[in-house]
Image (cartoon, rainbow, N blue to C red; front, side):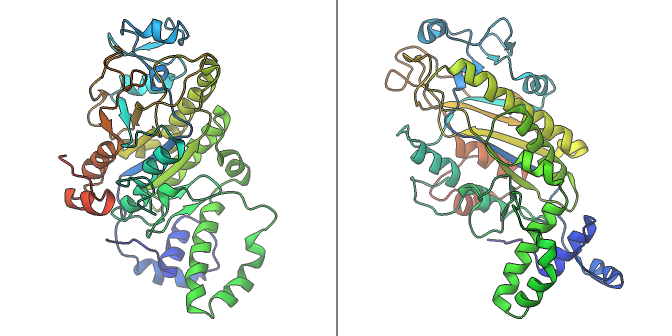
Length: 394
């Protein structure tokens, strides 16, 4: 497996290219620049994970289904304000930007996607969504980390949250960006460097610390504080999208990013909750496109959740843990826009166990297509290093 790990020299070079101050004398810049080798991928990839289990039936409303009204007992988004996609589906009224992307050929919607875990457990389905393993907890690394090993970049993948998500953990270097509370690393840089540089093992830790601090130095501290976290408020998700877009748009920046949003475990009053949380998704997509500028044409954004919700409404005007949900691919690099994949239907015989939307698409197949067509990863590598024990026909 190819690893794209930065040496300290390469990190300093890229920091200078980004306009950062890392204490390198001016006379050394030309020498360092002349020794830069390797080209970064032109392609960008962003994952937005929706924590809790997205009700795909409310996000991509199958308004043409005869049983929809009875299953939801009329507890549906306003269909007069929903964005009609075709004779069967309409997008939730809050997804204005996504509808514009769909109309522009910049979005694909997969209406019945899921992991291969059918337990309806946040922990088991979430583990498979993050690891891509053959079974829950079979792998300690994340599929996004394993994919990153095949994507050359000047800076490692980033996550906008305090801790590195499982999806980005593994052998390939990745960093989480979060505000540093109470400590200004720049005040201690010279002292720390002197101590860390005397120990070969600690020197690699110093290099990684430098990379994180260099990334933080490119951001406004207030913007970073506003962007990091799990809130679905459109104000937070807009800052997250802008920051990710800005960093990935730089020719010397990362190529892969991860962000998360909570607010989708809608057991109660699901309409009110989804109005707010889906507005956050839409805000993220709009801001990401804005931040990426011209590099949007080389970008894919994958929006996924660990499972869907029940087709039936419950007694609390909410929905319970289900199976399939809607997956979203957006970006200027979309090749096949529109509704992609089959629809299982909402007939009683069509529902899994008479209650859930049946899954017709494995999330791993979506990601494998991204790896193969977007990043040109060999099919053999996808089946061995990214998704072991999974066969593909791409």
